[in-house]
Image 1 (tube, helix red, strand yellow):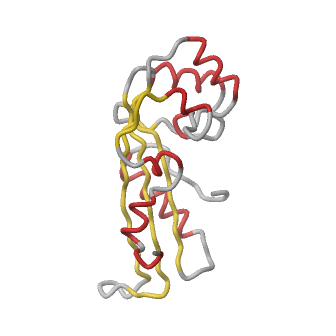
Image 2: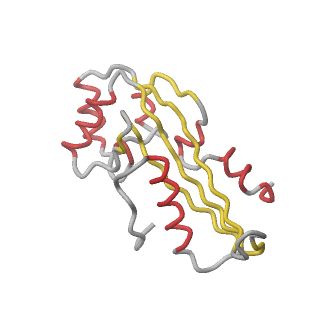
Image 3: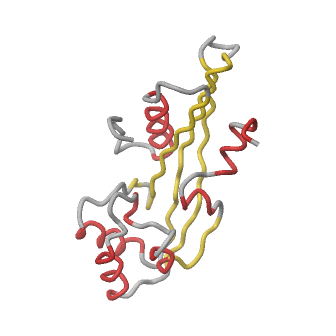
Length: 162
């Protein structure tokens, strides 16, 4: 979200919830605010968005043939309800984790993907919705979490939506 300063380092679980909370706090209108922050975590490190094609390629090199975690922090602020404990808006938070296993990628596959440019602005340097799906061997957990919004967790935190 433009104008929101996001954390880039730290405990991945705390980071995604804190960044989602910052996004939610930046929204001034509406009775129900839903904010999400998603990052790719490899070996306990948040990869973030690659700065350039070279870094995108380095991410692919690191993830090739390995599992990583797509972690999303979700924050739901219900401005129609007050928390009985704090007297403030009711805020619910949660974290969704999905394991994504990349196949072993050839140099040609990595180069093709980087040239395609889909890595730009994407945590971990890939998007599974299009050509990035060719990088993946399997997914363990919520597919919606990897594609964009962890729908199951959203329904848990805001059951009034259904």
